[in-house]
Length: 274
Length: 286
Image 1 (cartoon, one colour):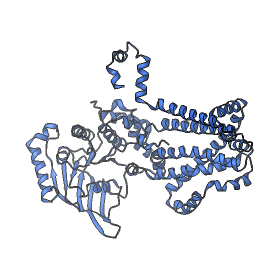
Image 2 (tube, each protein chain N blue to C red; image 1 turned 180 degrees about the vertical axis):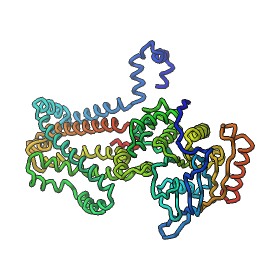
Image 3 (cartoon, each protein chain N blue to C red; image 1 turned 90 degrees about the vertical axis):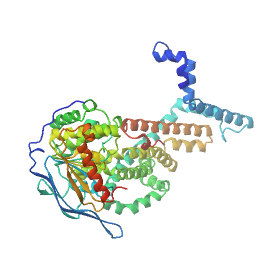
Image 4 (tube, one colour; image 1 turned 90 degrees about the horizontal axis):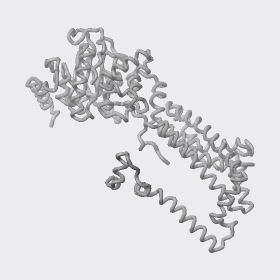
């Protein structure tokens, strides 16, 4: 797999750990059903995510993981509380955020390259520069030779990699990922996990990653946020102090097992696992 | 084909140093596509029986012509240019009508799909117009726009308009929510979401509407010609019917169906070209 260098952001990386990237301040989401009943979906929930962190979010299904991510993306109105992106309260989607969904959501009539360039087009960025950047990103996700391919000519894993490249083309400092590898087979998923780790370390971006796989959450994250069943609140916040250099052997290590067990037991005590 | 692969001839063909004997290849082709034989066979049988029945019972030609009579009528009128002249007239009416319907249908459909208020305002009127048989208003258009081409173009356009409108609205409505969310997460404007995502996403359905509409446009043109005209295949059919030239009527019908098939195939080609990316199951083949 080709490894193009990608310029780190000129901001404090994971090591420096200072500035706040995302802050949740007593965040709450309440749904109203058709017959007027109010259902508390999420929160109240407060959390601080530092720039350059990789936060995995796990929780039982229906706990509001995806809701939380959509609130961060500004795709959904919150009921009360605040979301602060780099210390500024948001009211809608931000330019500084890249989003990866559960399915790749590529536009089938556009080539891989044009799909990656979509954010640049929408945001009206300089196309020549974006084109160079898209080249780099496609190389970074191992698709240097697939520029002109259409989505239906790519495998599921390849499509999701295009989606990741697309989420990075406008150089957002924050990447939000909603179970992006859920639909992939186990082998591809492991490869994608390694790739994502590498992309994160090379780019120094802040990543918030929702998953329902505990091993995936531990393997990827610098911290794992465990949500309780609905309404989703913080059940546990685990600092994963595994070595920064992680590979598939890491998953077999004792430390890794300890983290996984801790999170799993947290799930059980919450009644999240049957 | 699979059973052929084991034969030495097929092996030679596969390795590139020999050619499959023609007969074997033909047999393989028919096994895969029996319809290549069955379609012409059915035609021959139907035409044969038809011809035999007419001759045996000595049915007069003005009542029901035999296939051979129709064939000669066709050769005769095609040779003299009669069918071609009137056919081109009808074709122009249908195509012009179709074009107007496509432009109007796509524009209005987009506006309706985009703005709820417009939809709510226009909806009852559209239902009222759609449920009225368009053929019934044809005489009015003849009165207003005369016996020339204009009235026929308008009738063809009105008949072809609704299938396009309905499919444009349905197509734009059925856009994948995730694609729209992707655009929203990038702070795309409504207009950007429309032309970058919704319209292209709707194209397979819009094309399904256009396919129906182009056939409807021919129908509209013919109906218009029936009601009042001085040229076109519809006009010709009326004249020939009046003169008891039944073989001539059948010949004109053959021309009309040839026109319909050609337009359908052309549309299909354009669609395949433009929508190469679309899921085959979503592309309706009428």
